[in-house]
Length: 378
Image 1 (tube, rainbow, N blue to C red):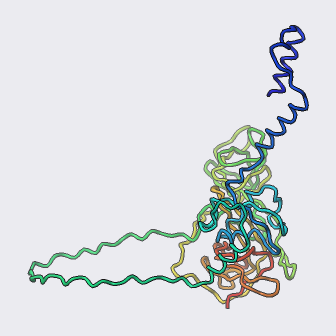
Image 2 (image 1 turned 90 degrees about the vertical axis):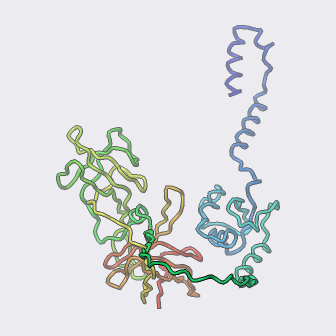
């Protein structure tokens, strides 16, 4: 801004010699230095909102958030605080990582800048130690005064039933957005354009669609995308296509000879060319009181990372077992590493079941789950 002002003043000065007497000249080098300093101040984050952790050999963001924050699913929050990390899977020993104070355990919030390795070891040791619960001393109450029996007429008995709040296994929108593996790609039509000529769309936008069968006012469609082919990591067999449901569109009329629809819901960005699938009701199942734990073995064949509108991350895994193998919505499965030593690395819960495949959400993770990791329920 000051540079623009200098140019204007010099321009005026060409017509009036007095302008040089009113405005002090600024050296170009000095002005450039000032602008660079302002740019740096805008980019730098304040250090007083963080503690610094030095990466050790073998560390991952998942391990660091598990050990320091006691919640591995918070690794995206740590990643966001360190924009210089381009790939969360690539961190190196000796690298300095900022941990937001707002996410730290209370015992780690201090005025010291560095998180020392001894602090991490102390936290790990505390987790291993059994919790000692002090039993309160019971004090005998004084004897109650003797009561005289009072005879009264019998009263009608009313049983008050407290309405039980329904608990669902998973949020409806997350269930829809999680996707599934299909042997064929559904194709009821596609998005062919927009009134505004936009290419990236979301909830509330209008689109022109072309459908295989004639559509009428009020017809609904799922907006889908066949993200990739899914092959078995061991055999290479084609299991199908990973179908993402990115939104819901509803026909609102016609315009310029084309069918016009409104995007009623969007779970991910929607593009021209995305396919349409017939709309069918998807309702989340109720959370079972006692989850089914079937005896089964299988393999993780695909993975998705979904962010909700509130920024929370869900890890979705797809497995090569389905209803034919005894899986149901709510089944709990234990995940083991594909590499030796074979150790447990997490627990997932099935949320959607097809004949030969199933979709599950990670409920507990000790480290990142990868394609090829094993399901071992025995």
